Image (cartoon, rainbow, N blue to C red; front, side):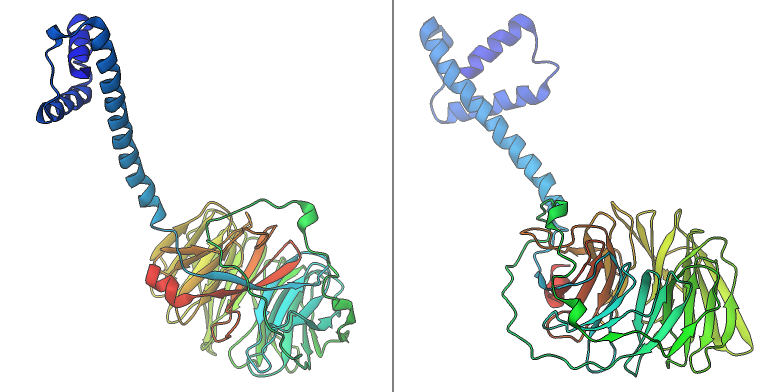
Amino acid sequence: MCVILLEAMAKKWKWLSPFPWLRREIDTLNERLAAEGQTIDGAELSKGQLKTKASHSTSQLSQKLKTTYKASTSKIVSSFKTTTSRAICQLVKEYVGHRDGIWDVSVAKTQPVVLGTASADHTALLWSIETGKCLVKYVGHVGSVNSIKFHPTEQVALTASGDQTAHIWRYIVQLPTPQPTADCNQVSGEDEIEFSDKDEPDGDGDGSSDCPTIRVPLTSLKSHQGVVIAADWLVGGKQAVTASWDRTANLYDVETSELVHSLTGHDQELTHCCTHPTQRLVVTSSRDTTFRLWDFRDPSIHSVNVFQGHTDTVTSAVFTVGDNVVSGSDDRTVKVWDLKNMRSPIATIRTDSAVNRINVCVGQRIIALPHDNRQVRLFDMSGVRLARLPRSNRQGHRRMVCCSAWSEDHPICNLFTCGFDRQAIGWNINIPALLQEK
């Protein structure tokens, strides 16, 4: 009846010609009704019968169109969902004790394996990864502690500070007996809720004031004329490099504290520095939108290469296995570079927020991206998104995430993040599941 009514209306107002899709739907419905033996000659119907049956058939047509539309749009939605990982990214432990935002997080390379955090509250703290207990507090700086890195073979830490110095200090820790870890519910990486200021952890939550305190460094590196924003050990641990807002990076002899080389060339403040794990290579990042590769492998030649691929501050650049460097920027991109060809990146990751200090899981080649918008995302080296760490059920960071650090061999936490909500978080990332979802 719907067919008869619509065709009659079409003949009178000629409204079907601009809508061929509706014409096709009417023909399809007509064929279906004919097959079911329900076609009725309109001449045999009274106005009341025509109205009743036309209303019923119109409802059928409407439902059919809705079903078709829903099916087509569901295909579009599913195409977006293919990047959503169902792998387990689980929050395991929160490390609470700083009184201000945490700029940097690092994991010791020697036994016992501890977690280190550097904070704007002028302190660096060492933590038991398993229990979340503060083990050591370093208070030798008189400015914000902007980075922390552990010596490759000794229980020694290197910290950089806003007081224009970098300190090298020795620590001795005794790990507490691990307690059973509370079971955290598995959370989808796409769920999210908002947090208010009152949800921020209390700065004295874990009693960091009760842990042993170190006040004096072994060595103080003092050649900069501005904030020292980052520092790292060269391979072997006999030399250290620092990056400063005075637009230079300095290479020091650790034993003598003497300045070996001053690395100049950046046009604006430096933001980060990183050393290669096996070679005498250094990469420095800057607000001048570039990062530079410094090569000290040949003692007689100190070459430098400039990488220009970002449009805003390069917040960090880090080495990976082989000849790759990954750079992150305030321009909301992360780029993967081949050191043998610096003209253009081999992969570009575009995000919705500025990217801070990134870190790469060397064994599995997974990049952890901490963002200004409180998110932490995981990508592979080809730019494929693997997961987003959960921010629901009161889990995750409540302010800007400043840094990420992998600890690939740790059985409990293999990724750590820190931010300006004054806490560091230990995560368990199910890497096989991540790669299987890829």
